Image 1: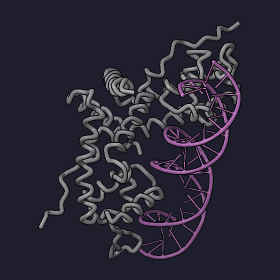
Image 2: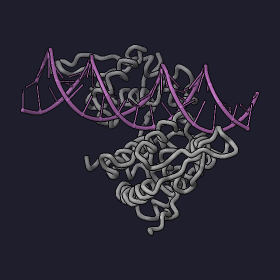
Image 3: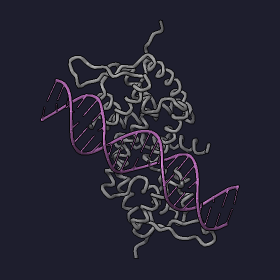
Length: 150
Length: 150
DNA sequence: TATTGTTATACTCTATAACTATA
DNA sequence: TATAGTTATAGAGTATAACAATA
């Protein structure tokens, strides 16, 4: 009769599981930090790209953020509806709509940046500055490796 | 006239954003590693707790995994439907249903453990063993701090 | 043929609120 | 009253597949 007992196994010893739990914490913190009616994490990420690279188009934004073109539509709709960016036609290629931040969009983004920075500090306050840099570097390393494969 | 230009800002410099991207990568990898019809990450986590602590009840599992009691019901339904665990009445408190893994459940869990281990190795293959341990420790530190607050 | 933006649709995971049966 | 389990519902966030307009 086979022994029906598992090897000692701990969920907490999996990087992936800890990643999930910390991601959930960070997500929740982000919402709280930006407040009711503040930018959501997705909207913030899209707006940040548009502010940094005005006249970028949706396909490129989607590729940069690792999401699908189809998923980006609702986000851009929302940001445009709030008056934070505009879709402007591009002479020379009538398929493309360039994304341009409005002055309000830039202002909201800059204000949100401060809140996000504060949020990051608080969420990872238990880590020293060095540890925070290490964490960032390790995560970035995994990302870079993987995104290179695609 | 105010200068409508953002301060140089990089999404990639945020721990939270990198966390999100790596979480997405890990999630995808997990699915691929466990294959069609294999355990999902949630089911795996619940089954692991039930295998390690037989006769645990749902409320405790939910607390341990950081999800709501209500959210756990569907997961337990699924695992029970697959014959991987059973709800058994607890003498002395008729509100409670203890969760007991079946022999099949234990077998599937042990088989899945091997696949999960392989998945972790591959997903974080770009990091040295030391770096993997560091990453795990840093994530765990953030978790512990936060879960203590609740 | 390939690409941009779009719509429709579905799936995963989580949350809130209210219920029931117990305690 | 408080707790365990449950149901119903909604909300993020993602994906796939197909389409129209354009290249």
